[in-house]
Length: 398
Image (cartoon, rainbow, N blue to C red; front, side, top):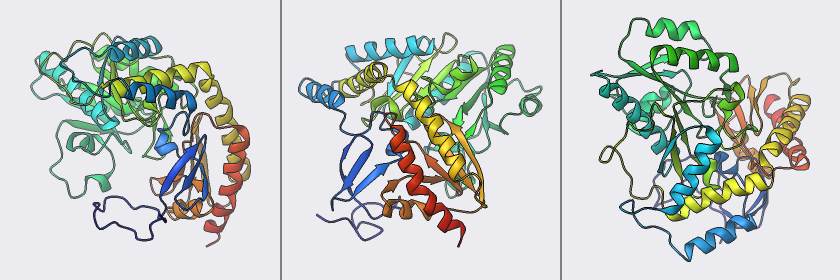
């Protein structure tokens, strides 16, 4: 088999602007295409492959699980759900978990929790505060919560009930909600991923937690991309010392096996009751085993510390080698969730980097996004920078 040369397939919907390579196998932080070419993976399936590729302990656990049960139904108890839920509540300081299949589904469930929380309190038309540049998914509701007009285009009318505010401005959210009795929740990413690697400041998060407490709102923190150890703590909001009421998770939780979760604190944990929400595949035995083993390996191998240490090394190297180049606006992010913003669109770098043996993405048109596996070494971090620098220099010289 050879790598595809056409941009589209005659049998697959044309929904992705794909790079013309087909990946076949992986090992650690490297993958190979069907022609045998090697790539250093700076994308990790968009912050999904926490343990890299073909991790021997994860593979062995998944093989064992496939030999037992893959799927049953939520008509019955699934022991792995209790095991993974117990771990997630312990790590988060929260109470209960609902399992689903993806970040979109987790965010959709969070929005349903917020609405029902309001309706249960006598609010007929609950409203939720969301943020500029946010991304929460591509269903009609999560797309409506998303702050990207390009994603909205062609899919109107959007779902009502969202109030949009700028990041890190407590006065703005107070002004936008003043005197509005219908507000029930605030929904945000601790670090915006698709929006361009923008962080919520710790002071702002603390002020927001206080505001939610004052007004009896749910604080709902989308940790789909920035959670699961990516910043050096289990969840990025923990750097601010706060605990949310609702926390959607996905991506890195299953190291590549589709999984989503909504973790809820006491204020939100009992909002959904039988008949209010559900899923066919969510919480299946295979996905639960993937989540349990991912966390086990992360703990055994010290991957939170590795993400913090290697992430700091990578960020410093990017700042040193790229930060002073004319045309580089900023290097930002935390741990192994980093962005390099240029002063111009740089989508062409995705294909050029692949040609140079490096997988990455460009988000918000001008931001090079690096979210590699949490097993990345400092040597591999240096290799990412070495491969990326000449590509950025060439683009900026055009």
